[in-house]
Length: 124
Image (cartoon, rainbow, N blue to C red):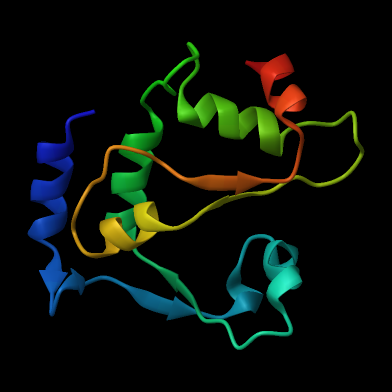
């Protein structure tokens, strides 16, 4: 992906080393508050950023190495699966999130999901 363009946009949004539009949100304001229930016993904080969201969205349009699907397509397969009759969630995590918040773009995307690799392969 065009990391230079995404980084340039993010760099223009930095204040004190982090994207300047970062705001804390309450769990009750989430579209689906159940998504964070597994961490309900921990003192977590939730944040949002339009700049970070746009950067991640751009990154997710790229093709996953080794398959012909984009990250968005893979995530859609995971979150829209119906054969298990359970809600499925994907979580972007690790360095990807940290780097975006710092105005940097890495070369990979790390996420965790609640289904099997076979479920993903069936949809991709």
